Length: 275
Length: 275
DNA sequence: TATAATAATGACCAATCAGTCATTTGTCAA
DNA sequence: TTGACAAATGACTGATTGGTCATTATTATA
Image (cartoon, rainbow over all chains, first blue to last red; front, side):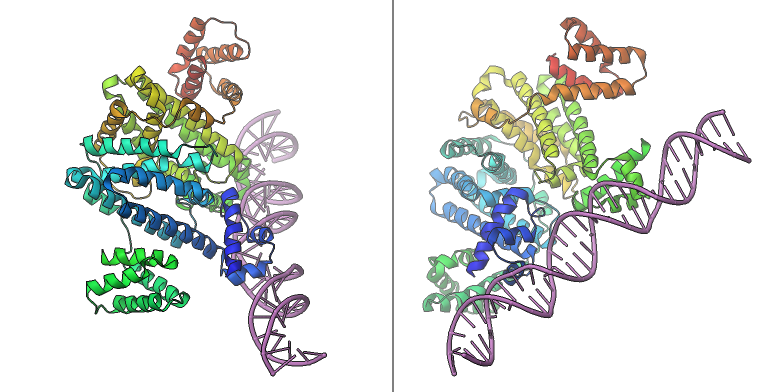
């Protein structure tokens, strides 16, 4: 397993530099000091590697942002949101570089769907933030607002990613917080209607439950601690055939919430049960 | 020459669908109904083809936008700007698709520089628009404003490009006009300072004059009309060794301004002489 | 019609790629 | 020390790529 991590780290460096397609498996293995065969013991294919990388990064970002949005008071929410988004980009600038280089690239169908999936999660988080901050006042323009926020997010990403310029993150977050507030409180002409937004969501919803089950089983096999393990097993049964009350589910979620390896599955389940 | 255009059109279709790297020369020639050798009679390499495509498209967009910005009164400027930008995307959606797919891709060094060049031209046009509309009132936030406008431009591009959703362009332009005005008249926290902006400009300025000369010579060889041809020759001499007064230069530019094949060189020279 | 010039062909080349698998190396317990 | 098992190797495969060039077809000229 440690070999897998080594490959991921070294491959990430190369991908960030040259892009995914332009980096050969040979190069990766040389950069790791291992043989080509060894690579294929850890990953079934080159595609599986990039998927693992993107999963790792996006899971991190989404859970981080979700936590920020949940734990921050209204007054500081926008600021913290932008700050932590850009901090993530900064911290994982190699990931960000790969993501931007390969964004909407031809690549794999599976990868495009995966990116769309994480994008959707992020959109939901942003929408929940808008709901909390401005509530009914922005119903008509809330999707426009969401797209504006996404734009602002991408706006300065090039700064960290393609130039290595020292950036005052606090000032940036302040500036974008002001812009967002200005638009939220003054904009009146909506463009993205509910219908338009939904037209842009060719999402396969059914995939989600399967995906949660997969992750659950993985974690059940992985985790040793008895309480957490049993909680996961019960949550799996509940997912297959609901029998417990919401209170019990919530309690079980509470059991795993703080386990470092359960952050992602915890997020997925909270989202699924809308708690 | 007509063969060249055929190849460009057919290749564009394939690039839009599959991306540049994923499309082989073989595929292109098959799609054109010509042989592989014939391809290399029109283009020295596959790279030269994509460069020709991007040149054609970007020259079109930049001259269009420049004309709009010059010819529209202040009241309608922002609206017309957004409207025509999105109309370009819509009209040349295959181009736009390729551009987005290949954006900041590894590709060729030359291509990256070329993209950066056109990007810079666009930024200059936007800045001149901001200057005209808001003048001294937005000096501190003008670069932030410019980046915001660029963000808004990209924001909904996916709509035309990846989904083929019918879009109310007028409403979109209205919506973005309002947002831009809101930010211009109310934003106070600048993030992109003059210094930061310049740090993001690793442009080779010297390339420009050479490039203008190249284009000039090309057009001189191409154009038949005596007045236009002589004007171009004189403008070339002036570029190599300035002898005429600004009035004469301006007159010469006026001579070529309306020739359909001189739009681009006319734009380049006007920009160079800042008239 | 004969000749020269130009346009077009597609078999071919060298390079590169992801992925495989017979073989070797290393690591245990017996 | 032996033998069984797993980990690691890298030469090899088959497919694909961008690009070339000797050959052939077409057109223009005389």
